[in-house]
Length: 379
Image 1 (cartoon, rainbow, N blue to C red):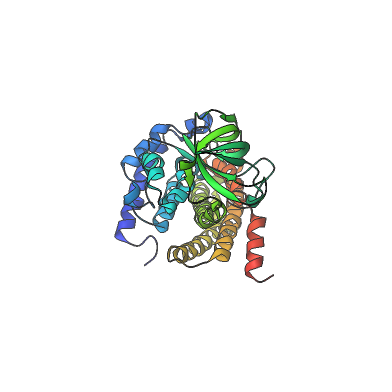
Image 2 (image 1 turned 90 degrees about the vertical axis):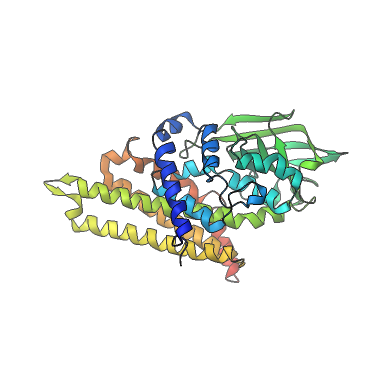
């Protein structure tokens, strides 16, 4: 059986579709213009069990695994949501796993359970203004001072950084750029911790993004995730899940755009004939559908292997690149088939076109993925 073929997963798909139809679609355009989704959406998603999918019940989650999380992501987008909505509503998917893996009861009670209940919002802060994909080169430093760390530095491109109540933050616990990293949970409102500014973006408009600044921020040692200097490994171990989520967003966006373009070409007539009656259009739609379905099949295959515990770092990188390439082709073709209407904010395909561009950048750029693939080839 495939990811989507069990009765339980069919029910999960139906639940997700109903949630999007009732709680998202009537308001998504307003959220796009507001630059964020309301906190109440987190609570609503938590009450029906969606927010906790993929997290064990022992930490306040709804159970399920990576495959269930992928299913939810796919269905949100296929039902008319967007990858920007995924980024805004499910940021905890990158903010919490390190705490859960460390099995720190204190952190789980203070941050994991409330977040999965929808009453807190968490973010993950790794990227720095001059760091890009160089995780080992992080310069935000945490100096030990008794029972606290004193943190100085800055982060940028932080998803949900404006709304978050806490930030899982990568810091250097040696000299800047040494690669000796730790993860600290830093709460909003801590003296010296400020949101520099809300960043305006090409896409993902309903997902708030921020610059963060830390000036002599005192963080309790109890807020460290795992032993000191184990942050780099913790970050690397969670990259597979993040990259597969982005790959899922990519192929699901492609699938949704195939559906939108097919519907448009059936309904839209030019020179007295439906667009879909023209061979050129039919063949373009066929190519779009083929690329989207092929990407979906490969991502599912790799995800099943990750869920089974296989070390498939190279395959994860390939899955992300394959899905992103399919998405790039499909969203461009879909907007072109929509013609002038596709360029308007009224067109759903316009949102997907904008949102898709980040997928080849976030979680490791296409070029970084190619480097991982090359290493996997022994080059």
